[in-house]
Image: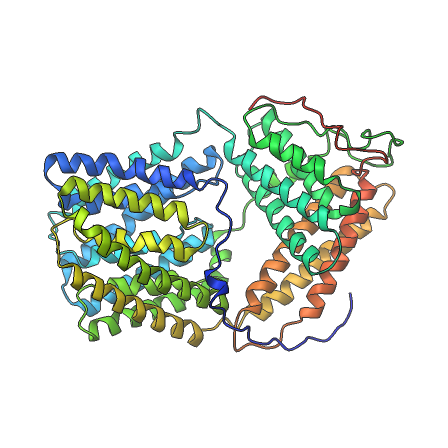
Length: 574
């Protein structure tokens, strides 16, 4: 490893126009959009029939759980959604009890800020999301300022629990139709990303960016497949073999066939049989590559070994999130206090705005602040436009809320600000569930609280910077060095077992992904020591060379003469 000296890290120019640039929609943008409508509509319409639309805020707390876990395999999704519902009920219970015990707005804002910090840290540590902590904070913060009595709390929680159970059923509903849908999508994304990188393979800036994106997609695919559990499945093994092929393409892009990778991705996305990549040593017209190479039956030994490793304990994942917790608690509390000082009736809007800002670093937090402000300002104009329709009656109000729910989830994947254009009128319409309120007053309060929350929240982020980001980069560099040395040693060992080679290669690939994520997060922080950017680049380059050598040693590269026409279609049914 080179001993290149660290280069000073400049504070990145804070983007404005770039933060508002629209991206491509998610492949499954319609799933959370349709799910939230299916989860919200029945409880809300039932309350319309009963003439108790004032209780819809509690059922909506449970219904919004349908937004979560759409990228998880169904076996894992069942558990995650159950925990999401319990977490939502827990936050709501604390908020309702606080609302019963005190009407002191300063105390309520403080409770809301602490809840927001806990929700942020737990969602980050468990990687629950999107939409992560924002929905939890929105529900609990709003409930803090709704007058309650202790006798009402059990009934309100029961409504939320019933709606949450319905949301769980909605989230699990596609399982009988496409039981392996999430795994197939993750595998297809990994193959497409690997094909994109193999298509560039120039080594310049474009190639480096495509490489990082491809490694992240492959890593995400492995996380999805590993979340399935240890139950044997022909479909799972077929998908794992395809992800192995994506990894091989990343390690040796010059030897990869982008057309074949894309063909596999198209087939995986469908409902037909999963393509079988076959034995790479037999593909094409070239000679068989033996010498310690993996066969079809033992090429997944690294996966089996990883399944046997216990996940990191939650406590070890909470430690690095301490700065985020302090930012969230401080920023949300100060935003709420400033809103109260300005005479706001709903300080939780400022609190939720601050809570929604906090990302992996200050640069990303700034971008989210820009997106939040722009989206909310446009959103209040949309609210003013739909209010005459919403005030035609309870049914019209519910239909407007459903439309905003669908629009928010359909658009937020393009850019956060675009989704906020629908989220803002949604939040304002929810306040009218107990009864209609003056439109001008709602719009004014929301604009003021948005500006207060964004400004105060960002100031808190600047004040509480993550000074340990540089140390995490050093640890990630050390981890890559150790993983690279182990892989290189095994690749040079003529008696190394296929299991050891595969485990070493996958361990090095995971370390490279972690290094890039850690370096990117640290580069966006302020007030820290210079980052070893040159060492990071050199470590990545050395790791990729070692990955290529390990792949060649395993014999996972096809022989010369391989073309994209050798795509096997034998395999499993969907």
